[in-house]
Length: 137
Figure 1 (tube, one colour):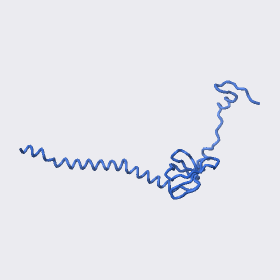
Figure 2 (cartoon, one colour):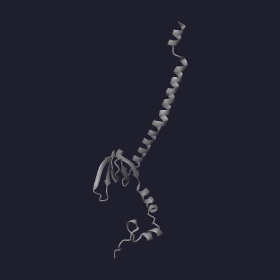
Figure 3 (tube, one colour):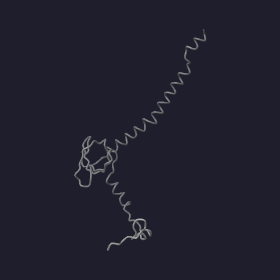
Figure 4 (cartoon, helix red, strand yellow):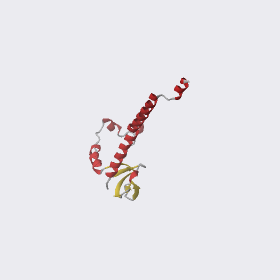
C-alpha cells in the first residue's frame, strides 16, 4: 500500500527542474528573438526620424526616389528623371535612406578615369570573336 501512495505523489525535485527549464527557455527566447527585433525597430525609428526633404529613398517595392514633402505619417516621393511622377506614401514604405552628402562624397571615388589597357588597343577594329570589322570613315 505504501508503494501505491509513493507512486501517486509527484517527486518534489522534478518540479523545480521543470521551472528552471521554463525560465531558461524564456531567457533564450528573449536574447535570440525579442531583443534583436527591438534593436531593429529602434534603428528603423531613428532612420525615419532622420528623413528630410531632398533625401534619396528606397521604397519597399524597390523604387528609388527623392523626398519632396514630409507630413506626420506620409511622404511625397518624386520618381524618375522627368520630375512628373510624384506619389504620396506612408513612411513605413521606406526601407532605406541615402543623404545627399553621402552620395556626393561617394561619387568622386567612383568617378576615377579608367586606365587604358594594352589589350583594349589590340581589340580596336576587331568585332565579335576577334574578326576584323570594316572601319567606318
